[in-house]
Length: 470
Image (cartoon, rainbow, N blue to C red; front, side, top):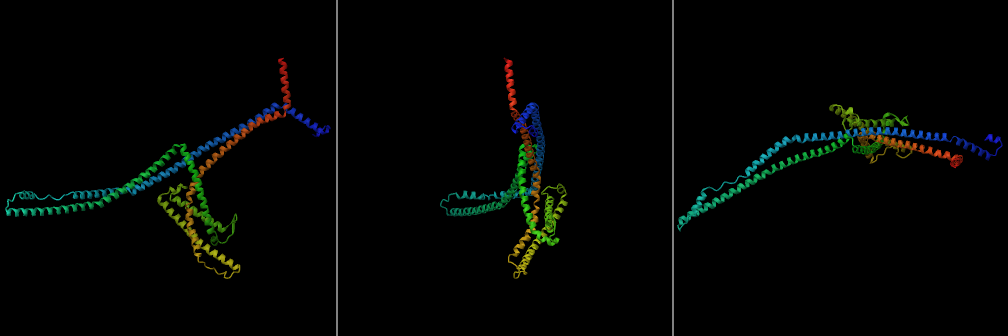
């Protein structure tokens, strides 16, 4: 503009001249500029597309890796469940079915006793003697008015009545005896029924566990085959386990904070003073945190020794005798720390009462130097001691959600990483598409700037074509 000012031109005219020069330059370089814009947009578009393909390739490999890890973790969990079910069945068989020979012997004895009683109960009383028939035949002889024959027949009648009465009595005694035999069979039947009920219960338990094993085996077969259904089930299960274990660990963190507040104050009497050491934390606070971390560590290794968790396979691989010894040693250490915390809870209450008495003395209250005993002080002291003793054992079980969190975190992290890569690939494609259409838009904007020379060129071409046709 200084050059134009030196020529003494009007600013409006100078602007018009500059615009004309720019338009002429742009019109002259229209084709190279179009090629440059198209090439630049294609380069960016292709670069974004190739980058998106590379990201999707990484996403595909990561998804395949996550699938393998998920199936491997699922197979391990299923194998553990199946192994434990087989251990339960083995324990059931050893405990219950090992008694079957004794049960069979008992059943044989009871059945033999029942059979003997039954055979004894079917015995009938002996028939009346054979002479009774002879007497009956004599009794049918007509007396014909002879009193001697009448007396004889009357005696025979009395003998028959007496014999009949005696036979009835014998029959009643025999029936009573049979009823007693049948009554004596009832305890044997009840014992047989009890034994059979026990057998039925044991067999039903084994059948129920076998159905559970069949269900686990079906899931395990799907995992071995790597079906999509198994992957979806394991993914949803991992997400559920992740958030559940995370919630439990948050609760455990709150329990640890309560434990920290319980032992931090009396810990200053043990470590000597409240000097700040690291990041504003005082010595007693650091000691309290270390003590809580040691308790959690002991709890984790105790769970490993009991084979409840499998964070450290080398612990579970130890022989049973050494492993049980280590478990008892860790429990003794944890019990000792819990006892120490109970003592610190008692000390905390004493220190709080001393602080209250000192504050009352400094305020000039009457009897401030005397620690007044309250009727509820023992409740607070006992509660603090109980908390100090119980909380370490509660923190011991944090190993279970911690193991679940670690195992599910790999899957959740893989799912999040796959989602992020897919979103990033979509973003790259979106940027490439924007540059592709941006290049076309720049071509139209470029032609819009030089529309006047293009219009003139179009008219000239049209006129020349019409003249050539004429």
